[in-house]
Length: 428
Image 1: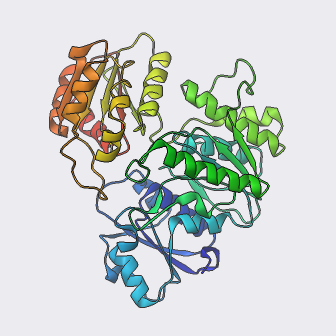
Image 2 (image 1 turned 180 degrees about the vertical axis):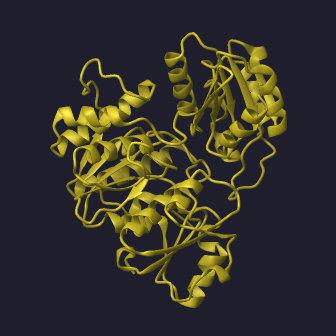
Image 3 (image 1 turned 90 degrees about the vertical axis):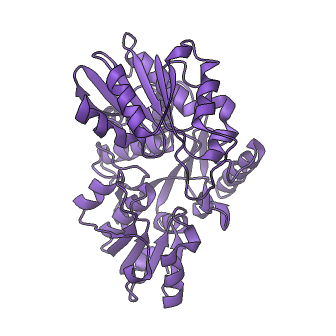
């Protein structure tokens, strides 16, 4: 069944950022939404609550309404082996992946997609903001907790002709269906922010991930789509964005080029870019207390971390940068170990917490945050300022003693490290 024709859709893992934006699109279509997820707090909780979309805790057959038209599952929480997915098949409820549902929503629209390891979310959010400002009433499903400049990470408009989304290279259901999630997309416009080795649990070598991206790009070109990559110097001279970093200038350039290609005047594009103030978990300002600025960023790849810390240093050249990194998955930490060790030089103080393990992998005794800390020390200009902090209690205790007025404190990682801000702010 096509998701756009459904009357009742159940989302297994509804709190995932991609699933939340998809659920919001379906709600805009008038579809009844139910969902389930773990009890752990997610960055999407507030967005779902504000839209009146509750969820059941844990995954079980009892969460399903046998009269549901469709169940959408995510690659997390067991993917195709999730208890609700198996139960739905028993009950005769059609089951599709998030990737397939996203592809169905995009059908019939002029699709603008962004692929690459880093920059997908921000570039999509910039484009959505520009198109909203230009009055084009776009549809979009962007994997982020919220986009302040648009008020939502997901929207479906029957009238607007454009659909904006991320083209994700990760597996549809890891270990079961390892096809890339962008297999279901046929973009009219594809932005390629970069191609780097990531997701080593799926792609063992750089050649494997290059092959997957190349095949996708070739398919888009063969179908008559426009591919945009490596564009330079397209922004008006002197334009100052409301988000920091050279990487965001590149994201803005990509957004500028595609918006110009679809016919939006330069002036409107620039004005739209100036309305963009960032996304949740993308160099997001959390708080200011006792003269300390608190920021959070989703950066979890070595290059993302390096660029984020470089941006922090550029924005706050006279401030002390204190970074707390939570490595995400044993497989990524192990595969990119050497690159991680050279990514923190723009931070004056570096704290490393224990690895945030994925549910899809086992603990690997060959890699640890302790070992990573020692490797970072070999390359950091201030060896004594690089600390292995282990668990959160140790990290909070260290930061309470270390942070002082004038500091910029930033958390980095794709796990749950953003939650530590609350613990620090309560005590500082």
